[in-house]
Length: 143
Image 1: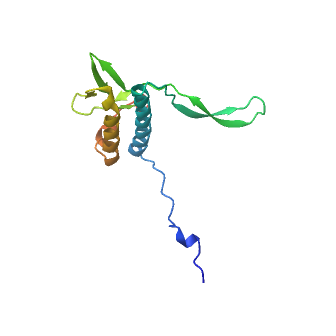
Image 2: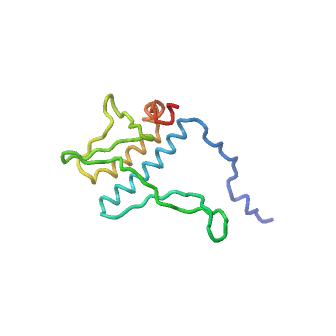
Image 3: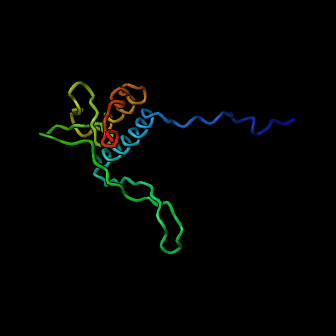
């Protein structure tokens, strides 16, 4: 008797969709940090980077709704001041407080942006910034 092809696969139940605010904010923050990584890589390599979002639009010829990728305006979370580079972590318009009264990370050079963003991503994944993410007040959470 031959072995079933489906028996070679690992069957599992579908994981529940995250519904708590912290998990949603973390997922969105990780997505935004990936966009910031792309922007930083583009700046370092002197390339133009366009962040795109999906949007449903109605095709003018056929009248059918289609998913299109359109450019999205993305603000950089990194900047230079007096020759020093800084990086901020944002949730909406709110800047996360990394340490007491410190909302920015100082960098030695713009080349350190990628490593800094990767470190922040790892810190978020293991939960080091959960307290700050939970307490972040945005324009939408004040309503």
